Length: 498
Ligand code: M6P
Ligand code: ZN
Image (cartoon, protein in one colour):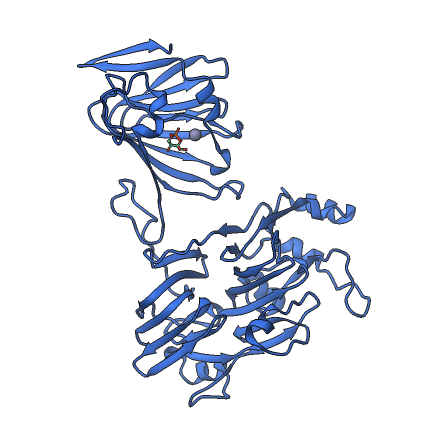
């Protein structure tokens, strides 16, 4: 069976915008959501064309469960795709997880993620808060000070925001987003800006249930998605319930039938033609199709950006590859590592004498599984490799830095080679720790830190730090580390910085 095209189900909302109606060239009557793929009792998607036209997707599943959803895939694993077209902000709300939703609402839990198709200049949304406890939330509800605790994320076209169940969130004004989420319609409204609906009434709030399910300190992560035709598949969400992959197609792309489950496929830029054994399906901008489990390999033709939603069936134990291995040579496809290369020409002024040394010489590299600097508590993991060069006898080193946020610590661990970790305080006092395979270094937030390779092999050091720390290089440039380290033959010499 090929891709299944469904008829959108439009729904009116008090915050509705008309961007989607304009794109689709249809009359607008205040519809703010459009359920594109759904097997939820609230809105049952109906097959739009072909032999099965007019039947619900739910009835197709009933007739051929394994062929449509896949063996072992249950109701709990279903995904929902919907547009949110917001002229005004949505209420600040929170969704329950599966267990709570089942018990309290006979519904499913709701984890969701938004791809931003269009946003006004300066648009932002809420995804998280700085509340440390439910008690703090209660007090803020009482005092009417909720708004100042909300974690706001500026967004533009192409951004993607992950909102796991339990996250306080609100889509903001002036945004058209495609939501890919679990199969649920349970929303606990927590705060609604004291605004009134058309009839002059405040909409109901669900404070107690919100407090039951909110996870304090949980924030939604923003993923930026620069167009990349080489990387092909980028995993932009990896929730316990499902994943979302982003694919930039230039010309042609082969979407092979990987999982033993259904998938959702949405076009969020350009347009595509989906070629499959049984025929071809046109997929215009903003359209989605349901790919049944029995769907064969698909060739995508066109210049477009696609989002693929894939469930992770709960009944199937999911054993995954690690995100990467520490020698960074066998990088698994689920993670994109950033890679920085420093050549002599990039940091020449830090060395005493660079005469006669090729400015293109690669001094060190940093490979990094980046955390998100906007997410409090997020961590980065890096591997720094300093090659055993000599710059007129001076040992090669990293630039060195203070953290912008000096309350933030960092951990280094030696993996290969030998060297020094140089520290400096704000008075210019400078000292070192020896670095060797297995040496662990707990770096205080108030110290500048620099690695130096004093050996004959590459010095490899792992680092873990919160990216919110930031790098302050200016102060190290203005007030250099107190010593320079030289090596002549086997002798290491330390000379005060001139
Ligand atoms: C480690 C970490 C990174 C740092 C890198 C290179 O991997 O501390 O934050 O960027 O070393 O150091 P520098 O930025 O000082 O060149
Ligand atoms: Zn650091």
